[in-house]
Length: 264
Ligand code: DGL
Image 1 (cartoon, rainbow, N blue to C red):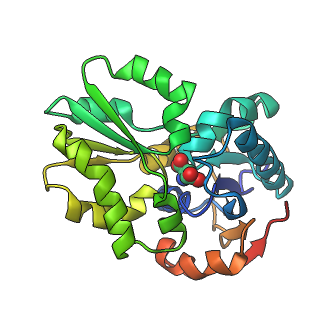
Image 2: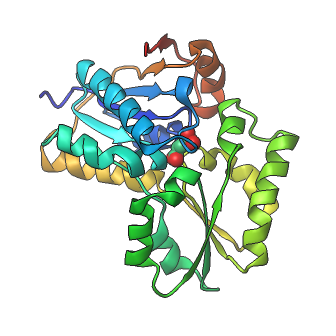
């Protein structure tokens, strides 16, 4: 596989663009492919079997486009499907992501950490194992956030209904003494400006996009597969309405781009 081959990145929708941005910043020579599975969003309320089936299809598509590595830019899909993807594609660099419990446990002063994530992530065996490993000395309060992903999908980053929903999810965590909030879904970093208005300045917000980009750099470096560049323009596909993704790209990705339809 040529080191100039692209990296395939996917999410249930637009959330993974928060990770794609970190990858572009860290690895500007890499050509990137992005699939938004917006025809099937949200993953958070779907069964693990359903998500695994979607991930199989998307991974096959991205590999068909020549991807040299995959980034599962979705906590929910990682919890349900990354183990199976690694079994199906041994030797392929695959980066997944999970809520940043370890850094949050190190950062908290109050000893109480809040996790905002999807129902699917919070119910997963992977998340339970993460708590077992890293949350011995801290109290972790979890908060599923149905509805938030849909707000981000619409690009409604500062709309009154988004603010109301986010406030309802965050208030109980603050009331219980959380001084550190984990953004355990890749859609949520786009809500950081709104979140900053809703929580005291000393509350730390932690997400894992930058760590994912670092891990990708490490895996490609180990295999001597880092691209020299220049990168090709990033290509986008959506299994939903391509025009809907094209509409939000200038806000969530910082530039306009063409979006192709990903068939089912
Ligand atoms: N962006 C996803 C995550 O990181 C999933 C959102 C959803 O589709 O529910 O968990």
